[in-house]
Length: 617
Image 1 (cartoon, rainbow, N blue to C red):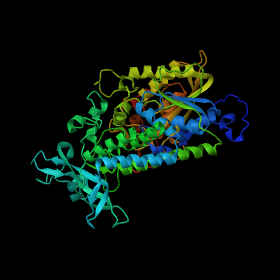
Image 2: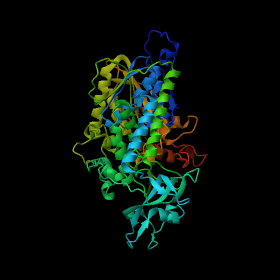
Image 3: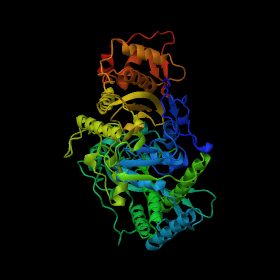
Image 4: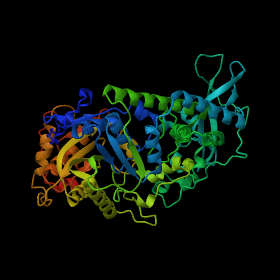
């Protein structure tokens, strides 16, 4: 496994409060070699955000590299988890990002409001929306004939067969096939049902899940017509367009499916309820309460849309990385979703307070979140003790495109032209190239060096399946004058490659945290090509490690060795590592991903040379 390295800490006066002492005061304390965290605590669950680093992954670094009262900076702050981690540990924080949604979420996490007032105001805004629209979730229970409350409806797309022009309800044909896609047939001509080659012509409700006094649990029944139809009359939902210049417009085939606006991703009923609820929240005069309610409101927007996928066994939730709508999807009761998220927000606040109390932190330290670019910080020289940051990973995620889904309701938008990403295709006015990405990274790290104190540290989270992207980060570190001091493998329990990458990249399912210090003049050596057989040696050392090994862990081991030795990593890819493993007669287990030998007696043969890794893309 990745070995631990001791990171020097600057001497500080001893605290008079023993409970406030941190591991950073112990000169023998080492940063973790590996860190596995869960994405299930109340803070993490309160609001979703793309590639969010759990605060529990940040706390160990802050506690080892800073003292209470120090200033922690995050220049790619996203949802503000660095701010939460700093506040929990009694540190101050400065957060910067160009993301409007990120600032909204981060500020929402940090707001401290009276819990009773929040619950009362939440109930009031729900009541106001109900009065305005009527009971649009009222349906007839097919068991007792009384009025029931709809919890969720299952909807299905209707497809037109290109052979016989007949129309098939996807859900019905899926059910007829015993929930086996490969056995689905056209309802008209019995030809194989292939949704990709068919045209979506309609969408229909197929199943309702209702709450009724005749049953102690949710009842499933055939979809019923609502007793009170929802109307958009006198309502003004955000009809924000998703332009063809956006990467996700092409990636999610929005033009083909007629999904040209944010409003088109909602049923008319949910669009009406969300609009009425948003209007009621905006009418709340107490600004902190309004902001906290808006935090809960934006947290439900994806689940309340058609993007929430149905599955015969369990809901599949919605991908935050794309605009995909499955052939069968849910329409959830917005009021129920909102009320749950208000409670989730309260649990998050209480949990933060408990975490502070467990560390002897008496009050919330100041945390400032401002919109701003990482390469043009509004902070004085030498004003920051530590930087922890998690920049975008190249072309994997387009934050501004996906943030549009919530920012349409906020009425303020991220400047996509300033985003530190690499386009998959040239379609916009600004060419967001690899060279531009590298320049932005260099500029950001130079600014971090400027604002860091002389003995401050910077920890950068990064992950990519291609060594060429790692090389950009490698060069940026050197250009900005940072020396690598320690590498931590961070396992956030990420989903499978297919689930996260939307088919564009074979990405790794763990990250590396690169902790670095300011290099002295003349200390940094030029990056060099890896020696012959360096890859072989690194692969063999990785395979000799104890425990379960996956292609991701082996790949990150190789990347770590290259980074530590100042070798250029541009020839190393996940695909290449997998190809070499296959040459060794070793393949990942389909169920667990753990690498195993197809023939236990097989001895790994050496890879030909380091170019073999780059040759398999």
